[in-house]
Image 1 (cartoon, rainbow, N blue to C red):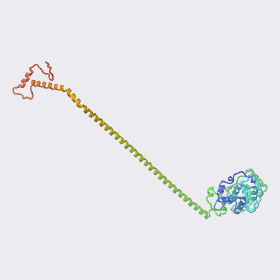
Image 2 (cartoon, rainbow, N blue to C red):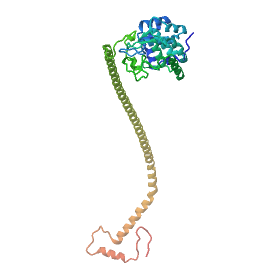
Image 3 (cartoon, rainbow, N blue to C red):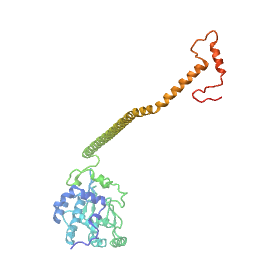
Image 4 (cartoon, helix red, strand yellow):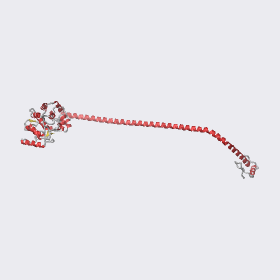
Length: 383
């Protein structure tokens, strides 16, 4: 029969930072090989020497005790198995892990029933890594009364149940105040350097030494191994930053090359379009010249045909007109000759020289005495 639990899921029993560190721990992954309840008890007996949530020394990962405690969470212990843990004679740390299991998993109203037989237990052990000794009874009372356990948070006990537990302790004439063996009453008040909580999940996972039992690490910041690891991490970060800068430079150069290539392609396309436009203009010009020469040739041919046709018609018309106008022209010439002769007879011939006797003037005067006047160009007379 399983223990009456609070009904909370496994991943919500502990604080998220602690839970994530446990699940990411190499040591916890090694615990997959443990299949039975007794194998886990043997591992606690061999490896656990304190029950703090975080391991001490130069690494701030989860402790061995809490990795094994989480292993019990996945196994869901029965009532019989829990009694075997709480009464185990070989190691007080096996019993302490059992009490922690009840504090996290059990229904709060059943805690007093589980813890009450061990309130005055006088077995001594050191729950912390500082070596400070206490009794199992004091340790159990602090688990009941406190909400903070070595700078981590325990599940909250309802206030009515807490008042009932205090009343029961008073009836047993036992202290109702925390003794401090499980850390201070507040997280900010912890002054023990070995119980300090890691600032974040990332910080707690940043260093891994491959230790099978993390609690065996000694010393903290002064460890040469920690310094070597820090230098190695710094060098690795520097190399990564250098690689990123090289990649950025390469990407920038590639972008510049792509931009220049695109610009050259655009320039080539523009040149090709200009050449095509020039070829189109040349083609249009040749077409216009050909049309102009064709029209000029046709116009010249047309003018030549008209001129040749006009010349071929002109001789017949001239001869016809000559034949038609010749009688009038002969008559006109004859009339002019007659009139000229009459003028010569009347006035004399100017081309002949005058004589001394004035024969010419007499002729004129003689002519003027006549009453007949000759009209030039005609045969009729008038007086």
